[in-house]
Image (cartoon, rainbow, N blue to C red; front, side):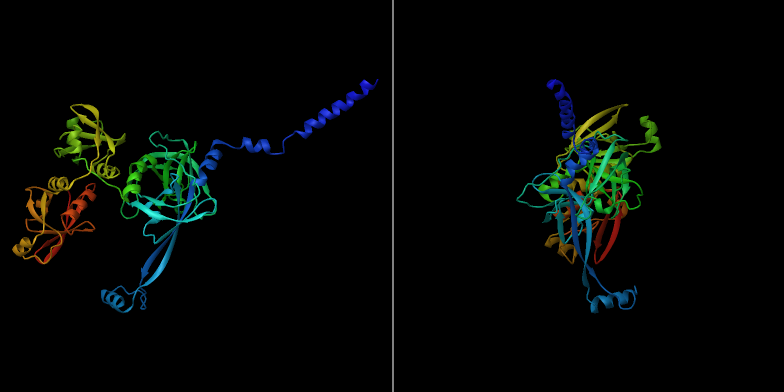
Length: 460
């Protein structure tokens, strides 16, 4: 009889125990809601930083309502000194290693007089610009901390798929992150940005990217860094663009080690394909460029590329024309390998070309091949002979018949004072300017003949 009376008690204790061990409301819900997207954001967001820059700008006020006449402008310049004002801008960046190096856009830090970096945990640092490159719109800044810094290792972007989910994170105000998601809408997009720059091979996403989160990371669903968001295309509505991380990898080491990108050369001169050439080579479509010259001993020559070859692609990216070929070539640094698809004798093959530094001798030879001009430094003897007013610049001592320089009217004895925006002091400046302009379709020279100077445009 006592045994039977204990049975209800045991049942009650069992039920009570079940209730005692029931998890709090929402505990399972939180675990269930941690989707791959949530985990990717939680994993990477501590490495996303806010970048706050201050630019000092000179301003001159016109007390007569902004009259633009040259006389008034000279008057204001002489009698009304300019005043300084501070412009502030915000952007984002991503820590890419534990040493405090931050990858961001060049336009985020352009002309910055001071840089402040704020982490998601509210820690604030003074940032130092390590290197920047306008052609790729990438820059590296650095912060120093005694405590460990979060970071995201660079992933890969050569296996991206149209339609896959991506995440764009920014830290536009230094207080909290902005996260947008979407899919990859297109690959290998070319867009025109500021400063008359054209950018190639961008990732197009339907995730919103604005100036505040420009410079922040683009991630795949696993939290891998696949691109750097950019907002250089102001007309974009409902779409965003990102620089593929593989393109960034090619120049990040140069920015960290040298503060700039060491652009090399391949020794290839090309021309666009005409309809007749397309028919001659029996190509399926009018795309690619034809090699018209290979400098002996150059990287292209060592790779076996020959005059008359048709170049179809670079690292699996189709080559549409000469302009695109040169601009893509400018995205490679010294030491990079380029896999170039070459069409020859009715079949396609792949050649590996290693980008090399252009020596002073090679730069001079390149100028001869490219512009049809040979130059020399200005000596006292040349100053007396040609009655020059200055030693600044380089003198043309050779003009190749039928070359671009000859066609535009340059003659021996002319002095080249400027190439594009770069002033030329000596042969070293000339060689560097030639290298910097090697990817362009045209080049502007300031040429001095006697007391007169004039600008000419060469289209090699």
